[in-house]
Image 1 (cartoon, one colour):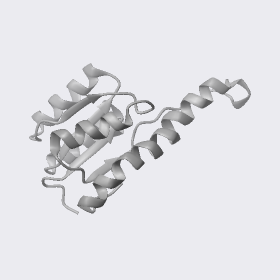
Image 2: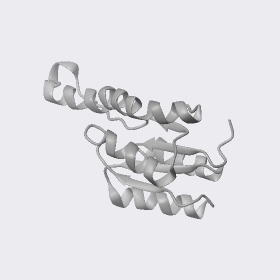
Image 3: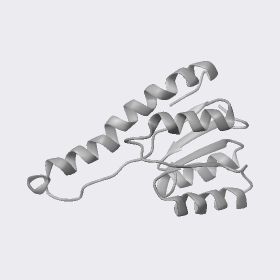
Image 4: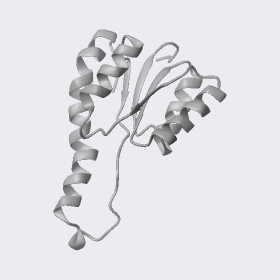
Length: 134
């Protein structure tokens, strides 16, 4: 699959693997929608994408645990379609299991599992239209 003119939605796009993926895919011709909670970091990634020769990305400041519908709606409204969903947002807990508070586990689960399912469900109708990928 080539990425020229493909629309790619990347969660966790403000740093790490998500930022690197956004920059790389934009270099390959993708139109990227980057999602993160930190507006400044998203702006920095957007600048890196432009420096690398990619088209201007859509920056969406959002929380994947609460804003799945808005994330997808903004991407579709901006680009008109969706070809790829890259579920990248995630957190970790480096503590010992016996010290893990259930509220912290619930937060980890909401970001790493629940949000992936909800966002995927929101994207499927659009991905079916483009024969897209997750």
